[in-house]
Image 1 (cartoon, rainbow, N blue to C red):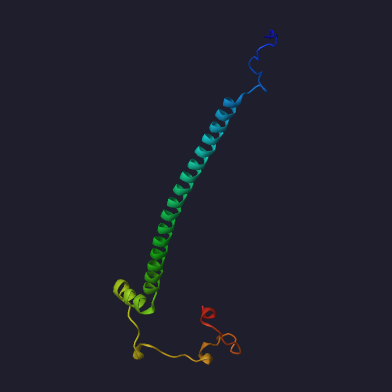
Image 2 (cartoon, helix red, strand yellow; image 1 turned 180 degrees about the vertical axis):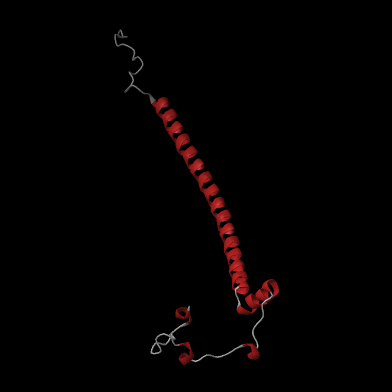
Length: 125
């Protein structure tokens, strides 16, 4: 038998600063970080959707209330209602035919200058 002078192979020197297990741990850590960010983002999206739904319901309620208030304002401003309220609060009434007089434009002329005729009720003061 020949004497064996060959040396036994020793452990392999590392390929770089990180070995295989370290790369697996880094990969798992990166996956965990990315998965956590995805879960957080989906949770934020779900809460945003809930908030948007709540705001849409509030908007519908406000539009409904606005429609009701507009209808109430139109009703309160109607001529019939204003006349009835004026009669009730102020004791006013609509003049009868016997209580009204019709004036012609010739009767509205300025007594100092008979050639002028008042064109509207605002110029009669």
